[in-house]
Amino acid sequence: MPPAMTRPGLCRVEQIMGTAISLDLADDLPPADLHDLADDVFAWMREVDARFSTYRADSEVRRFDRGEVLLSEASADLRYVLETCADLWGVTDGFFDAYATGGLDPSGFVKGWAAQVASDRLLAAGAVNHFVNAGGDVRVRGCAPSGEPWRIGIRHPWDAMASCLVLTGTDLAIATSGVYERGPHVLDPRRGAPATGLRSVTVVGTDLGVADAYATAALAMGAAGIGWLDRLSDHTHAVITDDARQFHSAALPLTD
Amino acid sequence: MRRAFLAITGLAASTTALVVLKGSPGTSQVAQDLPAAQGINPTPSGTDPSLDPAAPGGPAGAGVKPSATAGASTSPKPGKTTARPSGNGTTTKAPSAPRTTTKPPQSSTRRVTGAGFDAKDGSENYGYVQVQIVVSGNRIVEAITLSLPSGGESDIHSEDVRNRYNGTGGEVVQKQSANINTVSGATETSNAYKQSLRSAIEQAF
Image (tube, rainbow over all chains, first blue to last red; front, side, top):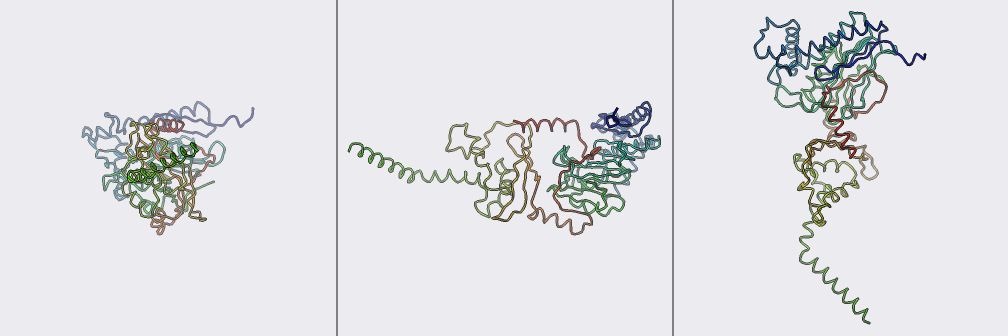
């Protein structure tokens, strides 16, 4: 049998959080173990959705927002998310604002954070080569089934089928915020109006929740977000402006 | 002899008709030509285009103008504007019809990618221009620049950012079709697939 026909590991995609969550486990583990690991990842993502969804009236976030759950009664996960969102609000000069739309909506952090936690758990369980992609926010670890480092495309903001840059690495958190999928949904919290100037912001770091929040904050800043990202010492970025110009860190892990 | 007389009479009659047409209703003829010329060719003078983008919320015709300015003036657009309303039968008033937007309203949104053009000034080639429009019903709701030449107004904005920037910046975004394992992008919703499918269908027809 030619070895090219098979690859070790497992791929799975499920629709959770109103988007596609994809998982690629590249380790050559017994099939039963791989399925258990994948089951755990998607069970966790569904748990996060049930707890943090702003679309479900019975989610803990919605009940907390209505005052039906006190902070002292909240789950450890909700308390952690609220604390981190407050920190991110300060670090981003108020541009990452979980209350930008009026009610509590920590989605700009939660999706990336959930994928980060899933990836951390996989690593701890011995699945050291994998990626988790939660609706475009990607955490990669180790190598692809080919044995090479993972290759991650940044979606071209005007062509859903194309990438505009390709990143590579063995330990990257890559989050992208953009206005091309859901329109100008990111509000500039200072003006209360949709942010303009930037079409797509990608932030690369080691924590996907933080990278996700930074990408959202920079998008809300508009053109000034490019300078703000440039001053971050521990993250790299790629930005595409409304007029189709591209800006990226010199240290961005690019490949051909 | 008879034939010659008829020919002369005919020539005289038609000349009279021409003179009469040019004399009295000539003003209306000019008045009809003017809006047509504005609609089709937005760059008859240098000052007009600067005034046009001042009303971005205008009718479909106004929305198309900036892209026509950027593209070559020999674009097939004039043919399009006159061809669309020709179904009405009134050929003389046809050029003004697109401005009144008599087309039945459509609720769907579509993206139409214009043909790419080289931005030329004489023998100087400034680069490649391509514009995509998003049309909702008979209104253009968004115009996206897929490709722009270096220089011009957009470059001035980029220049401000670049001055204090440590990274690589300012080049026009490119497409890469390399092998990849996964893609980072803005969150897609289930609607995105439907929207993408819809636009593909509309472009096909």
